[in-house]
Length: 64
Image (cartoon, rainbow, N blue to C red; front, side, top):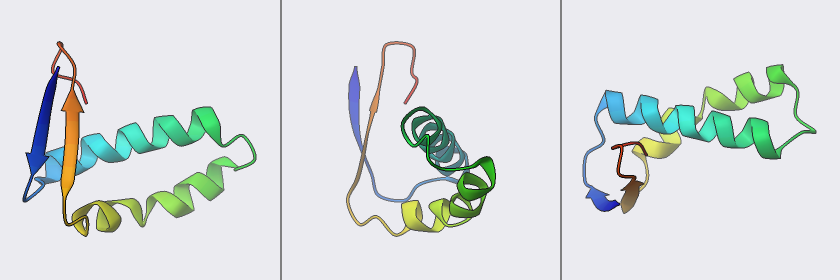
């Protein structure tokens, strides 16, 4: 595993993080509809870009 501090997330990284976010929400927030998730997802990239101290963990397969 690798712990990485990200100072300027790339569009590809933001896309990966949004994917991880969506998978997590689908698995844990059963009270949300697909439309709810889609609506919230519109704000996630901006939220990720606003994180001042972004740290990610990648597994042995280089996946977040």
